[in-house]
Length: 242
Ligand code: F6R
Image (cartoon, rainbow, N blue to C red; front, side):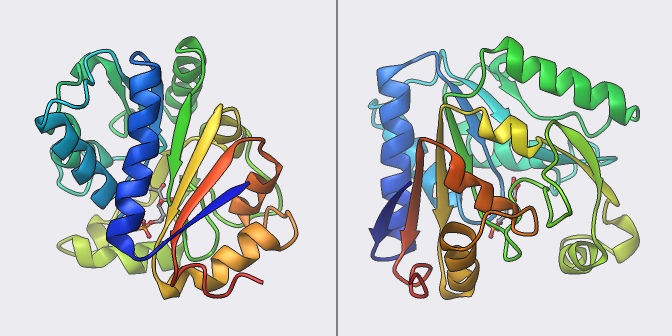
């Protein structure tokens, strides 16, 4: 596990974008595993800038996103589909057919999750998986639990997540109750994993997840067992590392 310490959020974003960019340059038809949330936005912005300058070519890149709300139409600005188009896909020369997210509009959870898992496999697995880190150690929508979920599955959102997300919706009733997410096993099959973390509010969970015991109660702690993980985190996020 390599830890790259950065000055601040912007420095974190540029360094993370550099790693993603190196992956695209060395393997133009690579499979990128992507994340939503606030942390990767700066890295996506940097990638778009380099694309605009002519330094990056996404024409052969394939992507698989970690997760998606169940029951939200893709046109809803809170869907992860919308987020990815807004922050990256619509701004670079990626072929939309090469971009993949679990389809939250599919009612049959079992069928959709199996299809998504098979899709990741059919692409040959993920070359580089980008991850953010939740305050409770979640990665994707894999929340603290008694065991590590292996494959893509449907999760019931915790009451606290619904509560935290309701500010983005007209009312709490409109917040989706479920989501599809890659499992811990799906994430762990990636050849390389890049975790981006910023801010003092993440300092405690960074110390716990990457220096504490490996336990499904802190899902990100499993990353300690992966052979090729790079954590790019700013000083504030690393301030409680032992
Ligand atoms: C996003 C995702 C989540 C976030 C995590 C951190 O696709 O799966 O696990 O990475 O909640 O979110 P931020 O970056 O907003 O702190």
